[in-house]
Image (cartoon, rainbow, N blue to C red; front, side):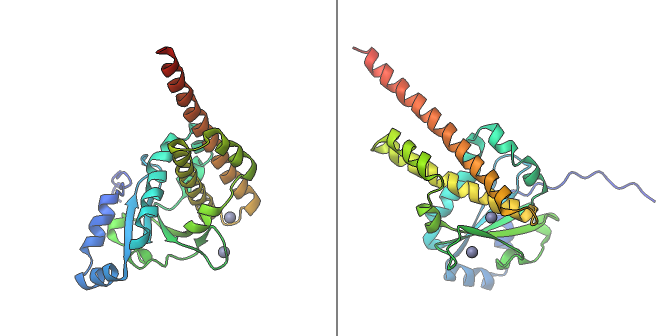
Amino acid sequence: MGLQPMRPEQYISPAIILDYLHSRPRSARAREWLSGRRYLPTHPGDRLTPLVIIAHSFSDRRIAHQLSLALEQDWLETPSACREAYDEILFKAPGIIVVQLRQNNVCGCLGHRHPFVKEAPFAESHDAFGGAHVGEMDIAYQRVQTWQALPLSDTALDAKFREGSRLEEFHSKQFRLKLLSIVLHETNHLVSPQEPENAIRERSMAFYRDAMTSYVENALATLSLTIDRSFSRF
Ligand SMILES: [Zn+2]
Ligand SMILES: [Zn+2]
């Protein structure tokens, strides 16, 4: 009986996924390209979180970039208490999560977890995945855009930014945090399918609310700082 070598779990980077996608037969890649299917692998910065592959149509690439921005940047900018609420869930989550970006869902839902991986390149395990499990979900982004996550407080925050570039910035941040909270919500479902919807929803809404509040506080603080500075010149 030999000793098992201590091998650190392989870190799956976006580059490994891109390399795997390019290594597939030319004909399969050509068909995929012509059909407009694209994959954007993105990693939320710290190694404990899953690698997320955004499966999307070429025409939705801007939304795919916004989702990757949410995962890579907004996630790290949220207060650590917000992130800690998902520590255990992310620790147990599949190492790779495929997010199918859709315009809409016929049922009207914001998103679903998928019991099986349907996205062809990731449906079967591959050496490149380093033994990581693959999970899948979908997100209907047009539904997310019109979704009033927290109707009362969102309207109140809206008024604080009034108009112009600050309001635009606020709205795109809000959209990205909604996307992020849905990815977390569906990941929670993937990890604990038995947990009641209420509890899962409460957790993801608390994340959204606290992340938004912290963003607005910071944005307003820098805003008033700018105003003070411009006044001090007189
Ligand atoms: Zn549905
Ligand atoms: Zn749910």
